[in-house]
Structure formats: C-alpha cells, structure tokens
Amino acid sequence: MNNNNHSASGPLTPAEVAFLCEAQSVTIIPRQRLDGLDLIGGYIPPFHPPQRTTIPLWLALLLKRQRRCNIVPPPWLSAPNIERILKTETENQNLFCPDLPYRWLETAELLLEGCPDDLGGDDGELRVLLRGLREVRQGKVREGLGKLEATYLQMNNLGLLEITEVRGFAKGVVDGLRKIGASTGVGLVLGWMMMISRWGWCFISMVFWTG
Amino acid sequence: MSYYDIDAILTDAQKVPCTFEITIPGLGYLEGNSNIDIKQGTRVELPLWLAEMLGVSQRLGTEQNVISLDLPPALAPRVQNALKANPCTVDLRSLASHYYSLGERILGLLEEDELVDILSETFKKRAAEIADHAHNPQGVISSGGEFLKGLDENERQLFKTAHESAKAIRAFLSDRSSGKK
Image 1 (tube, rainbow over the protein chains, first blue to last red):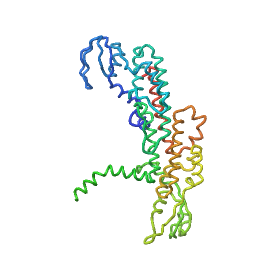
Image 2 (cartoon, each protein chain N blue to C red):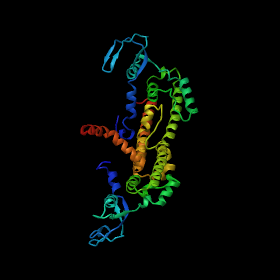
Image 3 (tube, rainbow over the protein chains, first blue to last red):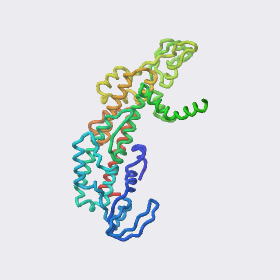
Image 4 (tube, rainbow over the protein chains, first blue to last red):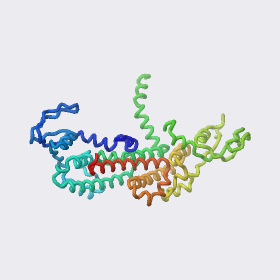
C-alpha cells in the first residue's frame, strides 16, 4: 500500500483504518477442531465445533477464506436494523444515529467482502441499504462542514472512516480561520490561553521558587 | 510557518503600497533611480517583508514613522465589497496568489476589524464550495472550472486535501466491493 496519502487524509489512511478494524472481536461458528493458539496479540481458545467462540476479525476472515468457520454477523448488521437506522437518519436531519458502532462502515465492508453468504441471506439488499446510509450521513457531514468555526466542531456518533474522510479538510479550514482571526481580540485571547496552558506550570513553579 | 516554507517566502514577496514620511538619503533605488534621495511623500510599492520592517520602525528620537502603509489593492474596499456581495465569484488568485496569508499579515499591521470578518466569512463560504467541488470530480470540468481557477494557494491546498481523501475512501470502498485486493 502506498502511503503518500498520509498528508492528505491526516494520520490514518483508509487501509490503516481497516487494519485497525480487524483487531476487534467477532463471534464465529468453527467447522473444524483447533487447539488453542498462543499469539502475541492474545490467546485464542480451542475450537469445539459447533460451539461458538469469539476471535479477532482478521483471524475470522482468514479462517472463513479457508472454509474453516462461519462468521456470525454482529447484531446491528442486519437488513431490518440497517433499514430502521436509515429511517431514523432520514427523519432527523440534524442528528447522526447513535445506534451504529464506531467502526460500522469498515466492519460492514470487511464482512461484506469476506463472508457475504453469512449475512442472513440477502447481502445485496444490505449493500444497497448501507450505501444509502452512507450517502445520508455524508450529506449531513457536508452540511456540518459548511458551519465550521475557528475553534469548535462537534459531530457526535460519526464513524472512524467517516472522520478519516473529512479530517484533512476540516483541519485546513479551522486552521485557516484561526490564522485570519489571529489579530482580533478573540484570537489574541485564544493565543494567550494556549500559551498560558503551556507555560502556566513554569510560571507557577518560578513564583514558588523565588517566593 | 517554517523558515524554508516556500509559501511563506512567496507571501513575503508580495507588494504593499507605502508612502515615505521622511526624506531618506541614498534610498532612491527603491524607486528605480539610483544615487538619489527618496523624498518625503513618495509612494512606492515595497515587498511585504521590507514594508513590515519599515512600517514598525521610527526615526531615532522622534515619534515619526518612516513609512505609512496602505491597504494593497487586493484588499481595497472595492474588493471587500465584492467579497461581501458574493465570495464565490471573486477571482482571488488574480488579486494575490497567497491572498489569505497576505490578509493575515496586513491585519497584523493595520487595525481593520471589518476586514477580519469579511475574510473569515469569505474563507468559510468558499471552503464549503471547495468541498462540494472536491467530492464531485465530474462536475469540476463543466461548471466549477472558473471558480477553481480563482482559488488562492491556501484554498488549492484545501481542495487537494479534500479531493484526495475522498478519492482514497472511494478507492478503498470500490476495491472491497468489487472483490479485488
């Protein structure tokens, strides 16, 4: 993977976001017996098919590719649930639905790619719903970026991949506004506050020493 | 802003109109004719770095300033009014290639509270427009060409950032759904 995207998208590229996402746990139904694995990242308990176990997503995807297990999709990733969330999102134009996990987009992508047959039968419908959900939320992000200020931006319940998408741009705008406003009263006060928070302890300790 | 930052250097090189308040011997070459004193009241366009230095210095032992600074044409009231009317139709790049950086520096030297508001508002409005263009590569050629040509250096950077992060996400998602690695 080339990493010249770093400057553009901030500290993380989409591929790295997906990599981080693979560390989260997922429930599987193993098809084969496996002794416990002692990995650096943690201990993988032995598999006793058809008992369910919880393992990291990357291992689950690997075993799935080798047809050694079935992945149990997380409860939120089902067509009816996504449809419900999509409805909430469309009805509340100034709110991101809090029922989605932080890594929803990348988890859904990885699972749709890795185990489309485990997702309750109709992965095509799920794909359409997720695309719709993403577009609705992108629209809201766009709306929110139009209201950027020099000091403050709040978008609750935004996913990590969605944050990665807007981080570079939002950073540029906020920085630009801060520089333009730097000569006014607010800017000066902000500058002072930043300086005080940085040097405050030095001053206090100096006073303490000399006093 | 780093010492070797090319944008900072180019910002420094932008011209500002100045009026000399006192006669200075031997500085005539600033006007283009060498070996002649520069007279009081002469108007010269000086690069920002020099104007900044002279603007804050005073004649030794007096309250008299060496030069007085004027607003550069890029920030003149006419342009301010145009920005107030519709920020997105003004070609900032033809006014100054580092428009906002120039504005910041001038604001540091002159007290212009209204200009701060105008610049912030302009930047905000144009940034929203830039985001739209950056996410929509088809629309750029047809409708937004004129606007995008008029972006200043800072805004170009912003456009590039927005465009590339959108592109990276799109590439990532379409790679996945088409089953490629």
